[in-house]
Length: 153
Length: 153
Image (cartoon, rainbow over all chains, first blue to last red; front, side):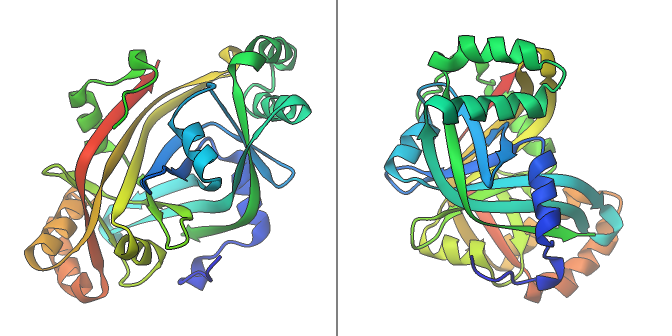
């Protein structure tokens, strides 16, 4: 990753990791075979230096990942518009990595991590949900190659 | 744009336009010369079928736009996690277009639209801000080629 132009806004690694853990959603940027970028918002879970997302078994983001596995995943945390300062306080993390369609244990792990994050009170029902959803769901694991966080406050 | 897989979730055009107008920020997806996607969150204004963003005079997104003007801009509105349903209600718009670095009147218009959106109580101070910021700011106009909105509720 290139060094950040505004080093004064760079987050320490722990802060960026913490934002990746708690972010409500992220935007997955992929690339189609005609070099058109495509950014789609998705729920996700962060675990073991990877990001797990899930989706239907077909769609643009899967087509794109199959033709080019380079992806970017962007998470924004708290924001605060300061109208009189003509600026916004924000915190964000940008992740670069490879998108890999996973199966078997890796797929189940991805779905479990997503349920742990969004439905922590429904783990048992979540296991039943995973069983029902397994065949009609695709899980993509983004193996993180680099990430950096930025904040302005 | 490809037709949406889940047509039942497609927003009517007016709804998508309305979300583009009120969205707090968007993620700009661009592509570097090595075909690595890059998604960065940005304040923006929507006007005249274009999206205006502003930034410093150098940086990754400008390098990318100069090498490939195809961009995607993704705006997310309200979201609502439904833990017991293992899903999230959301509304989002995905825009495809060309990123063009603008100057002169177009540049001033872009900055004015951004101030009108985020600092509506500070239009006069905003004009002074524009005068001071003009030389150290770059404005990118995204000429919209296509967009579509999606909601799940």
